[in-house]
Image (cartoon, rainbow, N blue to C red; front, top):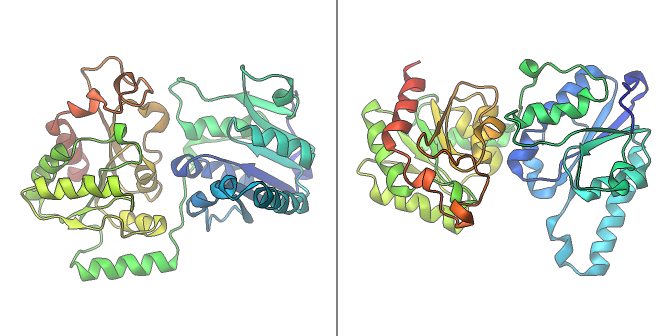
Length: 360
């Protein structure tokens, strides 16, 4: 393992690997822009799971996005092997000088050994042996409960290569695209909503233990209603998320506009970019809102707000002040899927955060 700076003028092609969920992939965006800024002549490709492509698609620093389909494992050994071979052939065509691996996924070590770049970097893994550590030329400290933001931790991969990093200039960028912009503009006209004239609430997450109870979201809607701003509710097409939004609407004694399950990720970005305020839990849509520059009220339960809070926009974190056990990082109290730090979080605390941002 080396700690020496690499000669950027010799890095013509680079691959950045981020095999994680949507929010994680979006928070890796500053790695691409920072690397491109330091080596403008370098072509940078990304390798991500296919469903997370919208998080990086259109990013000006990325030349190509290569993908892994999570469903390959379900297609049988022959089809999976063919898909893996096709991906490897594509990657070998890249003739990468540098590979930046931004997770502890073992696939990264295998790919570096097969692609044989001159330089490679990955997180240091105390639990790993020679195979992992011997695969990469450089290592950086893996993310821990260090109370540093994930964006900044990702940038450590570049710091250890000798690439200068300015966290204040490291922006999380997401490009909705013309089609998404046009559809959202049409939806706003359809519902009689003005740009910057509504509040966007996204109360759901794929992880139920991160969600605030529907009844409390409903009371928040009632508290926001006197502002006179339309309240737009969204969620993913997932049935459980739609049930949560339906419960909010049923309990709220004020009108709301329901776009649950109706938007793609790019359209969600275009919508939230036009909102006066975004309110949501620790989830990819919260990171999308922050990337679009929309003021964010982020409701946190067991996950760490220092590591995963909104990045690069006006924001307020709302979390329990009476549960010293948070952030515990568990899937609910004792992994019960129910988080008391959220089920008891007062509506008044969230409403006050909203009022602060709306009044600024």
